[in-house]
Amino acid sequence: MVEALVISNIILWIVVIVLALLVFALTRQVGILFERVAPAGALMPTSGPKIGELTAELTLTSIAGEPLHVGGSNESGLASFILFISPTCPVCKSLVPTAKALVKSEKNRMQLIFASDGDELEKHKSYARDLGLDDYPYVLSEALGRTFEVSKLPFAVLIASDGTLKGKGLVNTREHMESLIESMDTGITTVQEYVNNLHADTARSDFEASAMEETS
Image (cartoon, rainbow, N blue to C red; front, side, top):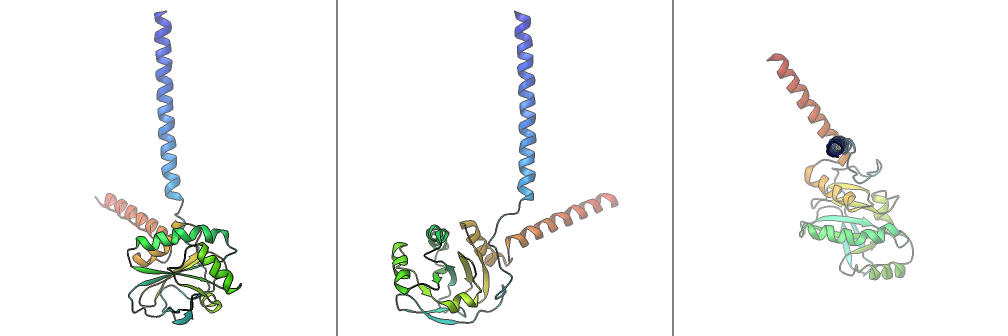
């Protein structure tokens, strides 16, 4: 009886040790996978105005009949976050509250503008009311979409207060929109560029450390 109890305890400890080793190996593999998988930023098209270029000012009229200036230098000192949406885009509808919360979290650093083209004006007015956009400029302009060559929705454009294009791309999540703001703050065009720079810095540091070890 005593021998059976000792043997069972030994087997139990062996099982625990094996499980601990498996958990350690799994944790290590998750860490490696995290390093290899690049964060997803906004999908930036290669056509249209380039990041860093000065945008031309467009004088538009919102669906409420109010004048609106998009692009160029902004006297208010606010950056312009333009989100292109459409009543026929289901992703756009779910992304609107996220865009409002994101811009609000920037604490009066930028203004949020909604834009679209096509369809009837009354349809967009109804769409704006349903989404609670009464406090935000909403423009219906094909010229604006052509200027930034918007082909798919939802699409976002970020213009600095001095009129410089800081970011643009297809956005489907909050992380995509945040990547545009991050690119403006860091001066790095895309998240992919940031990851490449990070890997390059790591490789350079490893090379320098290896060279120092060889000379010592």
